Length: 122
Image (cartoon, rainbow, N blue to C red; front, side):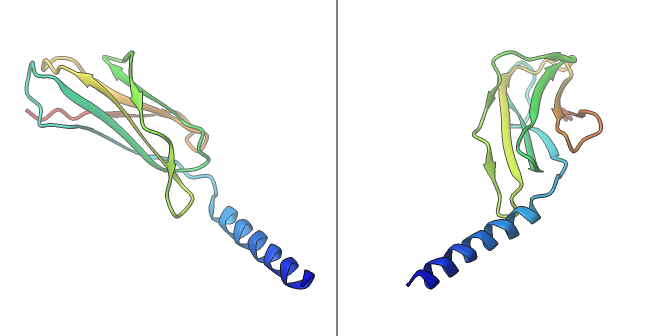
């Protein structure tokens, strides 16, 4: 009986190790978009969706005119079947047609922070 338990334990270890080998360092992809079509003077929600990164430590900052926006919210960090992670960061905004919004992402797989602007098509 000990042999079957030992064999099962080794199988579990091998599955875990094979999963870890797939989890190499990967840079995030970044998408910046709004919940609703843009309308000047009307409240909207700005989203920054970051996915496909590993390891999970990441810093996502939403900016208005290159200044950090306070009271930003985040989803729980989740992972995909390829062992990479994803995260949604969002905040309420009121577009005025003049302000510039962007998302700054810092991760160890990036040489420098990645900044993606929100393309506001009116």
